[in-house]
Length: 244
Ligand code: ADP
Ligand code: MG
Image (cartoon, rainbow, N blue to C red; front, side):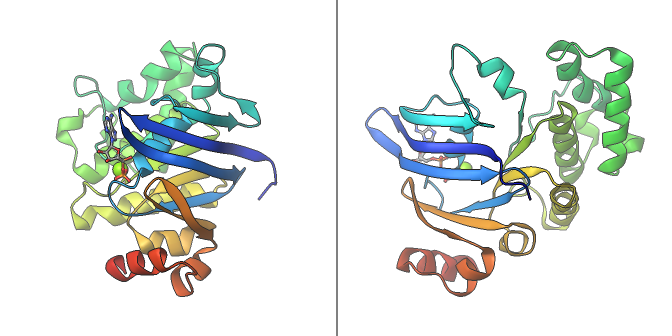
């Protein structure tokens, strides 16, 4: 793991009307680091990820990507290309084949030529074990396959960091593993990852660090063996007793 900063979140606050969802989050992810974000439903985990790539504009505070402060006017489009995101509900383009799903953004946004975009796409399909689905449409895929395609699609933009928002929560149990295995391979290849998850096994085995968030605040963070076996905060203990 390198020591360079990939993502830094500084005193991040986010409100929706009168509801303050993030109450001053400070967090830094180094290059090559795999971070698990855990916490109760409604604690602000999705909002935090969405603020990192400015799908939501923070109410206060700053986000830095590779040391560069994100500015919604000056650099958001360029910086966003460095950040891949995978959602709970896949969000594939339903009217496009798998291949087109993977190549459209590289061609349109990165101005990559079609042949190169397709070569990268085929490579990624091989990596996620779905080369035979290149001409399929999303409706012809299982949930686990759709999510693996969604991961490949995000990777097709060649991001420097990947954000995962509960990528396995909408899947039938037998499909969870195939998606986690793809994520595990990605982690072992050195991808920087922020993963919101309820898969405590994954957090424990694959992630370098775990952050527990409650009520829009970082309550506790540390290596998985510490957080899971010897949490310091009562709120962490109470949460873990419900999910482990
Ligand atoms: P988590 O992902 O930890 O379950 P979220 O970040 O999705 O939590 O939501 C945190 C809180 O913010 C919840 O109370 C949710 O209802 C609220 N919230 C999230 N997005 C919006 C929005 N776009 N408008 C209003 N409230 C929102
Ligand atoms: Mg969420």
